[in-house]
Image (cartoon, rainbow, N blue to C red; front, side):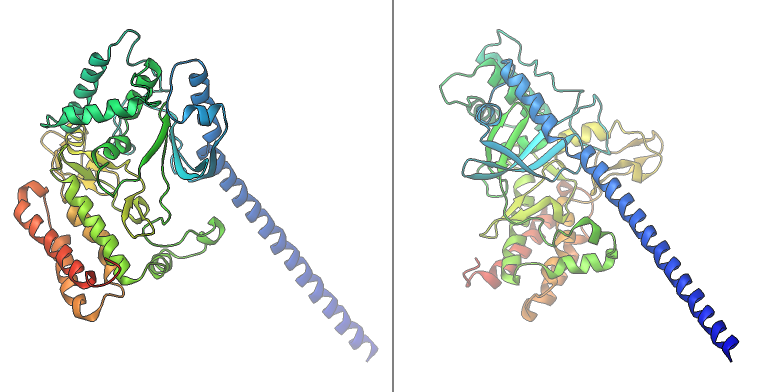
Length: 423
């Protein structure tokens, strides 16, 4: 009996020892995995978020008299322009929240540039470290205006009113509004003109879709803050994101959206943006990333473009994609949404996109606007959206059908909300 009791106690001791070792093993494993994840995330953060380097580089050039702009003094001398939270997705384009006195904004700064066109990155010519060497010393305002006109013509084509756009650029270049454009101001403006987002902000400055340009220094610039972004969904801590399945994450994003009338107004804004950049007064643009992260909205539920990096002039897109070597159509993809076909006889990409901007916008809006739609419009709305998504080829090839579908969608949504305060 005593021996049996001792054996039982020994068995219990062994069991507890085993459980204790198992607990210790999994505890240490959890600590190791957690530490590794934290290390990887921290390493990624330090590689991506290099705003202090960008600020130091810009301020060094400002103090040497190479560049100047409306934000330079606040950034470099007065320290009233602060870089806040990092939202950078690519190391060569730094994005931070920022405060400038009483203003809240988004600060964007270019880091490294490479002298080629890469369809996997930006369709903007980039070079190692912006030299800020154009225009050169002794360049007159008239010569600088000619440089701007030639650059705009290369970007958007030979449009009738490019001279008007050039005058707007010169007005921005006079950062201190003293009636004169200094060489440092001109160099900052020339660097900004190389960026798609700055060009689009100029083209759409009279429309509500682009946040306003608040100031600049070199190719660092400050845009108006958009209070609600992305277009839908929520931002979660990265440690939680790791454990959420993609399908569930997509469903969660659609839970956190405004009321349907507000979604309708935002959707109309996206359709109007498509309309504005198709055969606009300064040429056509292609939307090559029509995702929720590209857009946001303000407190009045007006759509705002958050990231215009992949909204590119059609002329530039076609010129550069013709040079792209390919073996399959997938080699002719720029951004997420601008796909052309591969000419296998030449192994070069063709210039015409497979889908127009409107079809891509409708694809992005499909689940967003159909979720919670009133029963008296949901069937017709779904029918119109799927007709829109089915559009193929460039908008120029089907201009009448494109315009008809766009107007039908806008009319359907406006009729439903026009009698409410949401309109």
